[in-house]
Image (cartoon, rainbow, N blue to C red; front, top):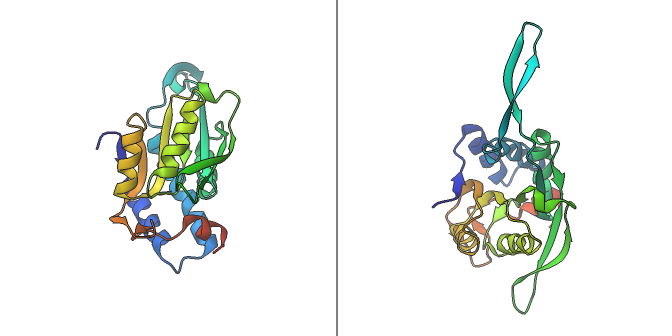
Amino acid sequence: MENLFIFDHPLIQHKISLMRDKRTTTKEFRELVSEVSMLMAYEVTRDLPLKEVEIETPIAVAKTKVLAGKKMALVPILRAGLGMVDGMLSLLPMAKVGHIGLYRDPQTLEPVEYYCKLPEDAQEREIVVLDPMLATGGSASAAVSFLKSKGIANIKFMCLIAAPEGIERLHRDHPDVPIFCAAEDVRLNDHAYIVPGLGDAGDRLFGTK
């Protein structure tokens, strides 16, 4: 599928396997989410523009390249997306962070925004939406729609585990938004959990049930 990037790096696949293990503790799970997010940041930022500068090394003057100043922002979907922020910031300390909170309306079953706080210059930034799980795709699609409604055009979506149903929904609703994920799983079960998945990412990150 166009605009879908699934990571096959051995380190990422190894850490995802540890995250899936139900015996993995909250502390370990939190660390793994951060580590995988940091590793994924390399590919998510592969298209950042560069500019040539002149730098004097201890030996000679060199023409070399630095980032061309493209602004970025990370927007985790509350609450599980918070677990991915620190790993990304370790490589992108200049990025600003916004937040989107969603809940599912019990009658319509559609996502409803209850909180949204973005950087003032969000329209000028490349936005990376963060959520560990892309299950039905409803929350991801809604989050992207909210961002677009605020005039933001440059958006990427990054998750750890994705179900085919979620990929299809997000791609159908927002074909312009690239999807980056560490693993594509088999399907959703009757409770909209990803199979085999890793359980509820928020509960495992924060030690709740």
